Length: 131
Image (cartoon, rainbow, N blue to C red; front, side, top):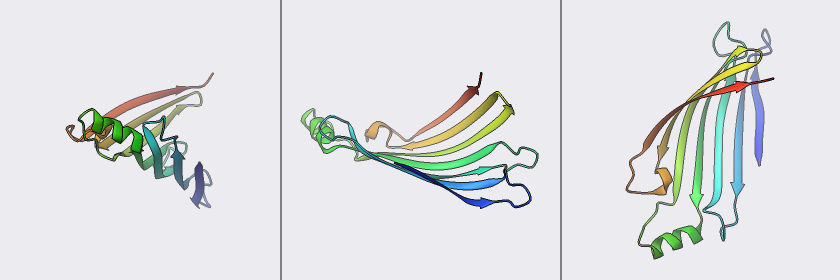
């Protein structure tokens, strides 16, 4: 499930707004590695003057291992952490009506739920092209 709500709208510039969102999901723990996911965040459209269509966002997501996966890993001699948590800061720039560029910076705590791995820092750039 995903829920989203606008919590602020600038009366002078209606395109400028803020919204919050939340996500929750479950998986069949008998066949899926992750039995649940939760996420929430905040996005602000028009945060920078003169960039009315750009979007700045911050979010947190957490994926939890299923009991079956943890049990399987124990049987293999591994001791996984219960969950992986991601914090994300993102900025989407509306370059043209047909082109958006989104930059994302993430910090992943317990990547792959492997306690032997250090927290990861990930950066990415995504291009959206509309035809």
